[in-house]
Length: 522
Image (tube, rainbow, N blue to C red; front, side, top):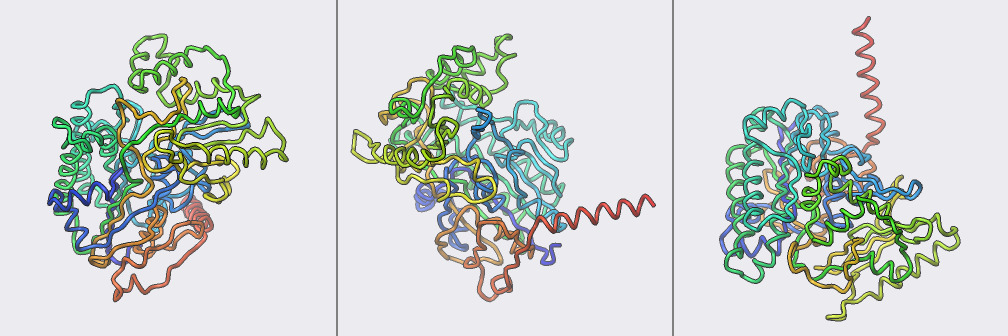
């Protein structure tokens, strides 16, 4: 129970990065964020590895590493069944902040966070993100009808590849405004004690327009800046309407952003070095997949193919196509390594015995360590991790064996279209890419003013929020409570951090509910 009459708001700004925001603050372009920095605590926020939407957002909401969630990227590799599995919200095996708060009779609202489709039942409401078209995207289920009628709200994932630059900016900014509009309505309707809102389109804006900002190209140089000014204005409107003396607010991002330096196609390198063997499968899905990626516009090309009735019956969506085509393009009998993008590599243990595992692992790490950009002699990898160095938990056996953390600005792709692997920059498409550290900012009655936070990680927010509500923290959370952000003279800074076995509590509550139902029957 919320005994402090406390409210907490988390504004998730997808891809927000201090190396972009602080220069805009210094120019006086973001007065709201500047005020929050000056009167709050802020610093970097280390993301998950890989630092990508799946699994980063769920590492935030669960306080756990991917080895306890069983999700490591948009897809998982099932080595036993030789399949690629597309992940969604039901793929993650853990409770989230709002589940734990709900059991403690604290209601929540969740809006626009990637990894939340399909939506699940919570004590409050949920508007999921990145949904298929015409999907049931809210809890309660009839809420989607209200949002569609009142706001003409479109929740499905928009693939921006293949759209012109003016259209991308227009779509993203319109979506940003709409997110704040529905948030205002939902807050008034449900009055959540905990609220999470993600502004996802800024990620796409930064992917597509970074080079124009960097090169100060006349027509598109200010697109990113203008979107951040828009976000800053709407944050102010939101704070003025919703935030009171009992409200603490967090600004955070799932990762940071930086300029794109070059793309490395790990598949081509694995083939050339004998780790990956491709099949000669010529199915219609593989032809579509390779054509779409060769054209460099991915989802948009798939959508064009789907206008043909016969193709529409074959292809569900872009990610399903990618999964099904990828698994059939691999010769599973002869491939030692099964790759995914972002430097995720599974050792295919079915083609060698356990004794050979360590030798192949060692050889692979040594070979990857030698990959250098021929243009400047720098290594592709900043660090190469074995899964045991990054992850722990009962699902670690399903984890990729090797995860490559590339040097900043490099993107590791996993493409089957014979794309070169020579670090060539992209001539079109994305010009900004993710970096490991995003932003953290805390502000409110419990928070110190003008303090710099060191060493915060994305898994730290969930336990910190639970502690602020006075709710025991599940013992298996990996994150720590960020006690240094609290004002030293307040009880919240001095009180003991309480942990418990959440599974046991959940069972007790479920048993209590069952008993009450039995009593009612009698």
